[in-house]
Image (cartoon, rainbow, N blue to C red; front, top):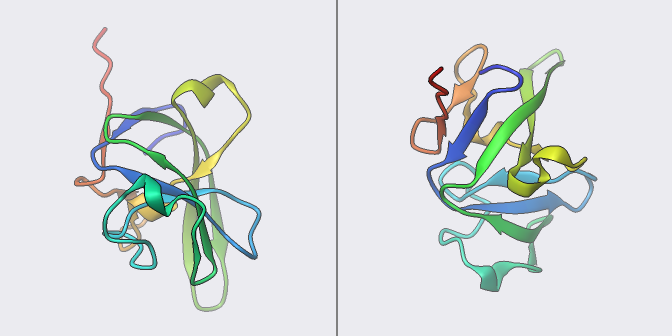
Length: 122
């Protein structure tokens, strides 16, 4: 996974935030079991388990990784990835796509059933 590479979602995902964090995350139930199993617009605006769902990205939506940073503590080392989506590729809004990665790998890579790299042939 490299900064500046583009990817496409292979599954619908929620855009959500934790009530105590001022950041937007992208994931679905298969990678974050705190989210509803089915991605549905009827869940937008719902608060549950310290999560508020604010929107949806759909299968086929494109994003570009813009930032990667490593956080470490005594017990844990994690990589966080932030990306711009679709129309916002030229805007300022960043979304945390870290939940779409396989945390067991070091460094993590996107889960192949969640995300596919867009290969540009020149």
